[in-house]
Image (cartoon, rainbow, N blue to C red):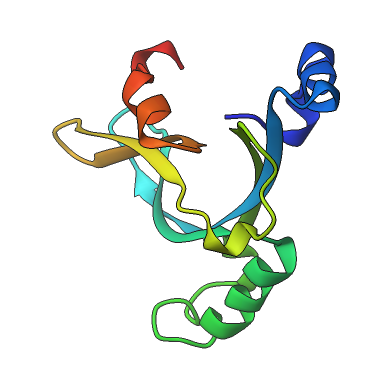
Length: 135
């Protein structure tokens, strides 16, 4: 996952040379506390809403969802937007037409299901190369 503030100087050099292009997408999810596990760790219910081509489009979805059943029972600050950079081999003119490939890892600890979001990828080949245990 390439968060905006984590783009290394070398990556910026590649951007300027045109070897890689980083395009930013906005990941919207909704999460609220559901209790604690056996060790006392806070557990949350996370609802994945999606990736959007702009922050404004993600914010529109918050406005659309906030009064719906299930969402309206929780504060609006349960919605979260994260900005993620995704490497592409070329410039993308319309990000709304892009299919992102997103890797999640799920496991059950005997009490709760845990789902870990790893990162979005530009293509299925990069997704297939990812080892979630490297995170």
